[in-house]
Amino acid sequence: MRVTRTWIVLGLLAATAGCAGRTQMQSTPDLTVVPNATILPAPSRTDLVAADRPALIGPLDTIEVEVVPESSREIQVDASGRIAMPLAGTLYAGGKTAEELARAIEGALRTHYVRDPQVIVNIKSSVSQVATVDGQVQEPGLYPVTNQMTLMRVIASAKGLTEFARANEVVILRTVNGHRMAGLYDMGAIQRGIYSDPAIYANDVIVVGDSPQRRLFRDIIALSPLLAAPLITILN
Image (cartoon, rainbow, N blue to C red; front, side):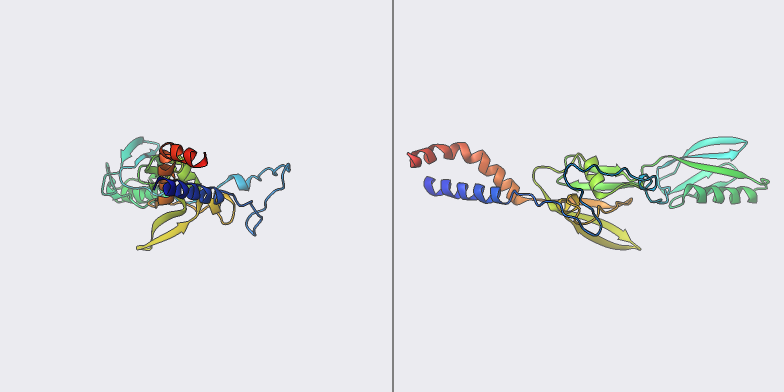
């Protein structure tokens, strides 16, 4: 029985080693692979600026509201997405940009006979614009989303994949127009430039799959000292 187990282990180790080779990066319509020892060109100014995404106000965010030139105050949006201000009353801020909320406050002030109000709104801190990262990452949790957030960056924010992660089974769950959608991604293919690193948006849920094969390999390594003695006996 020990002999059989030993050869099974050796076979599994050999098979795992055979699958460990990496595919070389190749150019695609969306990726140009620069030859070895060739310096990458510097990015242009437009390359350094991410595409604009509207920053939306959400529950429990903190905003600064300035009514020029009279007053300025910080307000925390309540759990229902509303704020309350003197004269303006209670306003719904959830889902609005800072500019949209400023115009709404101006309109509310006009109804209370404030002449030509000028309002500036800034988002001081946001707890609503986050993505959830779960599964086989080092630090699952909620991570802030900016207009530059991508799948690789949010995984890096979670301190990377665990040793048991299935890199070719990363799921992004997203709600689009009230409909739940899921996309399956291969981190290795993204790293090799086979396809683009997908953008991550607020409220996305990223789930990294688990690899039973990696757990089996770990168990095999743990058993290897116990199998070493019968293997040496066989070889002798």
